[in-house]
Image (cartoon, rainbow, N blue to C red; front, side, top):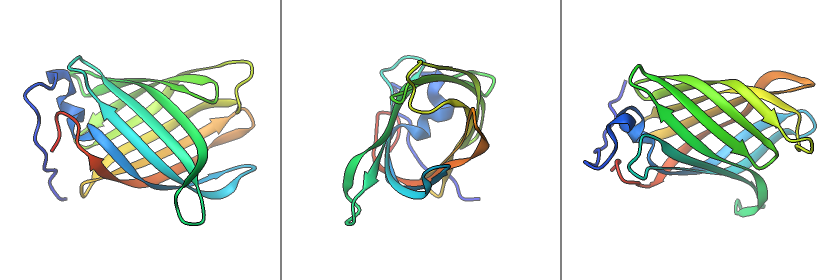
Length: 175
């Protein structure tokens, strides 16, 4: 196993030390599969930031790619807050632009974070009858491994999106 190398800024809240390696911008391309869409390929940008408090802000933007691999139109967007705890557990609250919010519970094991849906709430006009999911975030050779398994009322949990993203910008707490 290779070692993670990054510096932690002295201003990072101690509560974030277990997830400080995530701070910054991660970009790349993802593969996906979903009933009605089949196999597909999209662009991804994930930003993790901190304002010095006990949580990280998260935003994930995905987009369809044109023939030249440039962003052509939005695929999805979600934002939320990550709350790591001293016992190596984490709570994540997300809101998705397709009309649902989700609370995840998970564990932090070094540079690996596993999340499982605890609560999902949807608006009546949500684009998808999403019911929950599981996510994995990991630092593999300095890249962010990201997977999202998802379920809907008519779809049992299945792999939905997976990517290996490059760290393209550093936020306070990572170098």
